[in-house]
Length: 388
Image 1 (tube, helix red, strand yellow):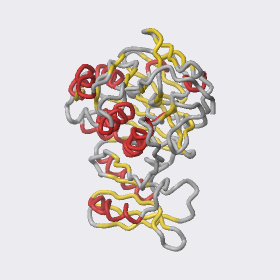
Image 2 (cartoon, rainbow, N blue to C red):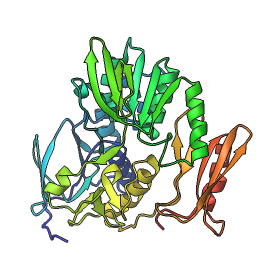
Image 3 (cartoon, rainbow, N blue to C red):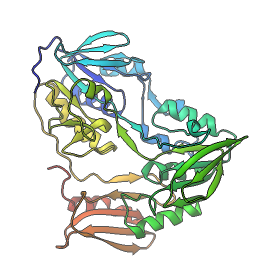
Image 4 (cartoon, rainbow, N blue to C red):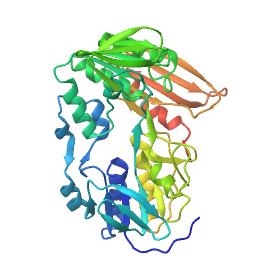
C-alpha cells in the first residue's frame, strides 16, 4: 500500500447518498466530536433514493421526498457540508482533494460516489431524449417530462424497470417494457415466478417486449418512434432507461486506486491506498458489487469503527431484496453466482414460494411472492451468509 503523511485528522466523505450519510450516522454513535466533512455535487439534502421508483402512485412531488435539508443534516450530525462542490482529483501522497471550492485536506477519505445509470448506444434523432432517474434532480426532470403525457416506454425489465412500470401503471400511464431477457427480473427470479410477476403487471396495464432491444429512437412531431431489434416498432411520449448501474470509478482510477467492477476494497473497506476507503454502489468487496440498501447499511456499520481506529471487518449476512411491485409483492435472495443447485417452485394460495436448493437439499436462495412473503424471516435464517 502507498504510504502517506497525514495532513489532517478530518474524516472526509465524498457523496451525500445513503452510503455517505449512513456511515456518518454510525461514526456519530461512536464518536461525537471527530471532525467530519462531507463533499457532494448535490445540494446535500437527505432523501430516500428507493422512493424514486414508487413516488408517482403515492402522488409525491420531488420536493416531498426530501426528509432533511443540508443545513439540517449539518446541525443534526455536527459536520461540515460542502454542497454543490465537485472533486476533480485526489492527491494520495499529500492527502488532499482538489475541489471546485479549493483544496481540502483529509486524514481518512471515504469514497461513497455511487453509480451511474448505464446508457445504451442508441441511434436516432431522439436518442438524446432518453431519460434516466438516478437522483432527485433526475426525478424532477422525469416528472416534468411525463406531465400531461400518456405513454411511457421503459428500457429494462430488472428491479428498477419493474418498479417504475408498476408505479407508472398505477399512476394511469400506458407502459411498454423492453428487455433482452425472456422474462422480468431475469437475473433474480426462476421462470415460473417471473411469469407470475409478468402476468400481474400485465393485468395492471404493462405491455412487454422480451428477447429484443432498442435500436433507435426518433422523434416525429409529438411522438417518439422506437424501433426494436426484432423489427417491431412502438410509439411513446417518453422513454426511460433503467438497464442497470455502473459504479463511478473515474476519480479513483485517476488517483491510482485499484478498480475492477467497482473500487476494490478489502474486508475493512480500505482501498489499495492507505487511508482511502470506499463503500456503497461504487465499491467492490470480494468481487461483489451489491447496489442495495442492506449491504450499504452493513458496510457503514463496519466502516465507522475502522475510521476511528477500531479496525472492523465487514461481513454480509443473507440480505433479501424487496421488489416494490404492489401488483405482486416480491422478496428475493438470489443464490450466489455459480451456486450448485436448482430452483423448486411451490405455488401457495395467493402467492409463490420458490427455493433454490443444493443437491443435498440445503437452501441457498429464495423468491417469495404475494402471501409467501410472510416466510421471509424464517427462510432467511436458513440461508448461508454472503460474506462470513
